Length: 416
Image (cartoon, rainbow, N blue to C red):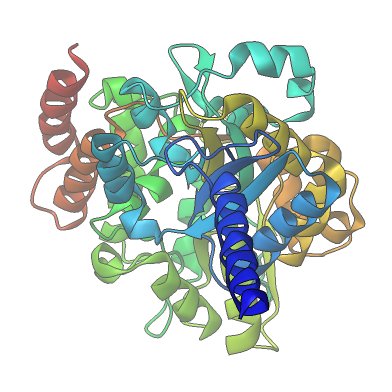
């Protein structure tokens, strides 16, 4: 009997000891730090899917194995929900430590004070000169850096080489005048010479932006002669039949399908659609070139940035960001997921991009690609431009009338 009581007492003591030990190792969910101070948990929100998600989350696992002071926890938040979820997080103080976001949204969240100013850390790091200016500038707000670019893309001219040869055209057009002439020459009853995406969404602003910049225009002066000249080019291509009126309903994926089917001779599109074209039309003989220019060569940047949430575990998050951006991690991630790294010392030295007949054509374009904005009010500004583009391409208004109306809206947004 005595032995039984001693056994029960010993058992209860053991359970209590285990409970106390477990409590001592519990994570403080509000701070992300373990109570014994041995390690810090940092949470990362991202919207990568498919192979990108797999490879990105593998990097966190690798980082966790390399050291024991920080544990990185990845959380997938769908692209469409990122801003909504981030806003909810702001209200509920449940923000993560790091957020991967669309580069065009970086300035917006910096403006509301949710992101850490990384300018001093980036200067001390001494790696900024290894980045393309455009992607790095997409992290700027009021001249300060609020993130690091992580993946980039840009737009180029895709052209059907067989259709060019059949029409006796040797080179892709390099200027707007050559673009009009070439598009018209390649247009007949079955084919359009040129296509863009002018659907009422961010895609149409994205596609228009290289032409706006090439003409010397900018979004702050959207009714300037330069901006009107850029949209007039689209109007001219539509009016002479070189471009289908259906472009106002076509996404970038839609025009890629038309290009792959041989119904369009030239289009503006990005590297993410190369795989689609090769799958849809394995024998299609096509090339990629710089977008034809007016006064200067230009393109536009897409992609995402990694940002650090203000007031969270900033030091630990910054160390993880630097590790992710090291070429040893960045090059294999970017090449295995078919994205463009924002670092020159990766993109311009890796054989993956230099050795590919299509991807290599995008390397010089990255030098002239610029981010949209950046502006904390970009969604509203872009919406005004989208409406103006639709008004012109549906022939509801002249270029000057449509862009005068857009200018009134944009001026009120930016307080001009």
